[in-house]
Image 1: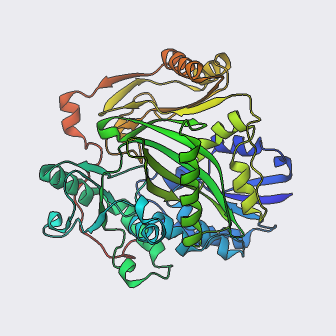
Image 2 (image 1 turned 120 degrees about the vertical axis):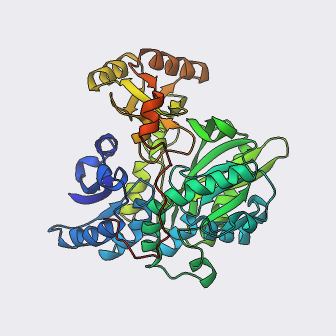
Length: 455
C-alpha cells in the first residue's frame, strides 16, 4: 500500500481519486482539508508549511507522494512540502515563474514575445497609481498573485481605475501577506523581489477571441500536451466563465501552435516532474495567439471531462508524476463524445431562499445521464458570503455533464437547471446597507512581508 498525501483533500475529489484504476493499492491521506485551506477568512500559509512538514516527517509509514489540485496556497506550497520528505517535483522558483504574474510575463517574453501583451507594474498604495500606467485604456488591472480572477478588473477610464484601486487596497492583503511568506523561501532576482504580493500589473486587453486551456505535464525534460479544453465566458466584458468544454473546437493547426508555445515556455522556466495548464486566447480575425496565464497544477474542473470523453480522469497524470512515473494519459475511450463543466452564475448579491440538498442532487444525477452536480450555496445565506469569487459574479453550482453531441449537451444542462430547486431573492435595500458587499472590505495599512503568519 502506497501513501498519497493530498493537500486540501475534499470528498468530491476523493471519490474521483478512488475510482482510478489501481487506486485499491493507494491510501489517500488529507494534508489539511479543503475547508481549512480555501474557505477561511485568511489563507493559513504559515500553518500549512510548518505543520504540514511536521505531519509528513512524523508519519509512521512511507510518504510516497504529496499532490494537490487546488491553486493558491496549495500549488505554491507543494515544492516546499515535497522537499521536506525528499520527493521529486519542480522547484519553488519554477512554480513562482508560473504563478507570479509579473515574473511569469518576463519569462514568457524571453521565448515567445509575440504571445505576450504589453504590461506594467502598478503599486496600488502609491500616491498616484494611475501615473504608473504606461498603457492606454482599456486595460486589465490584476494583483501579481490572485485566485479565480479575484480583484481583477477591466479598466475603461480613470474613474474605473480609481474605483478598482480602492477595492484592491481593501482586499489585496488576503493574498499579499501569505504570498509574500512563500516569496521569502525563494531565490528571486532583485527586480522580481521588488514586485511583491502587494503589487498589481496593468495589462493590455487580449480577451478578443476564443479562450482555451491546454493540460500537460513535464517529466524528465519532455513536455507533453494531452488535452485542450474550450473556456466560454459571459458577463461584463466576458469576464466570467460560463462553462469549460472538451474536446476543444479550435482548429487543430491552432492547437498545435499553442502546444509548441507551451513546450517552449515550460522548458524555459525549468518546470519539471509535475502537471500544469496554460490558458490561451486565439483571435480568429487576426490568427493571433495570446498566452493568458500558466498554472502550476492540473485543473480539477477538467478531471470529470477527461473521464467522460477519454475514459480516465487526468488525476491519474497527477498521481503518476507524484510517484515518480511517466504518465500515459487515456484518449477517447470514454462513454461520451463531448463533456462540459457548467457554472451557473448570479450577477449581484442575493439571498438564497432555497438550495438543493443531497437527496435532490442524487435524484437529478440518477435522472440525467452522465451528470455530476456540486452546489456552492445553502438556504439562508447571502451570495456575498461565498469565498474566492471573481470581481463580477457569484458561482452558484458546478454541473459536469457528458453527451453524444453539442445539442444534447446543452439540452441536458437546460433540463438540469429547470429541475434544480434553487431560488434566489434580491437583497432588500435596508439589508444591503447594513452588511458589506463583495470586495468592499475595510481599508487596511500595507504591511511588510512576515508581519503576520495568517494562521
